[in-house]
Image (cartoon, rainbow, N blue to C red; front, side, top):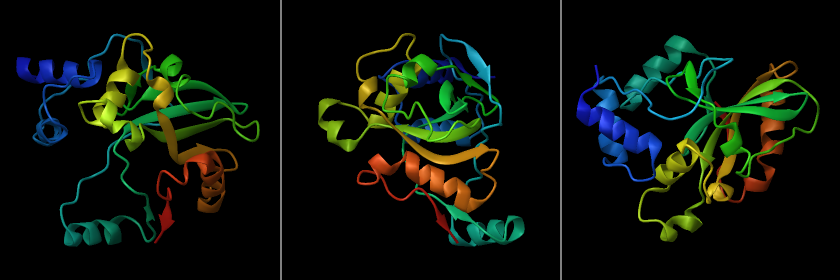
Length: 208
């Protein structure tokens, strides 16, 4: 059960752009297993594909052990310090955007995300689910007195859309759907969707 302090910190972290704890302090609470429930004021939506968190590995030995135990092949993507969202496309058009939440249920933030620099249409009319990070470029850092990740979280999770959403980029890092079963097929579409952002953000994936 979450303590009053955790509940207060969680509401500030997800429900405003003025968190009372730093990213490191908030993540430490999560790592220690405290029950942090994403408080918000909007509709909950179930993920079509669960959006689970990754195991944390603290050193190279743990990473190698996990690698050889689980997969013969690894896809590596840079850690983008943003807010993860799931995007649903139907016949190539964006119809839903949901925050990660607890991995199974998140907040429906479709109206908010439509005001960002998200790709509203795909190059072909397919049904698919995409994973992306909502990020604000560092060029805006001087205009805020807080971490840009927290700024984005406040904007995305606000009760109503606010000015500033138009500054947010949506960077794709994974996609699922018919005809997108192989790494090459996924990467071709992801590269296309991120093509206007390649000068700002690193390459989305590398195959090891």
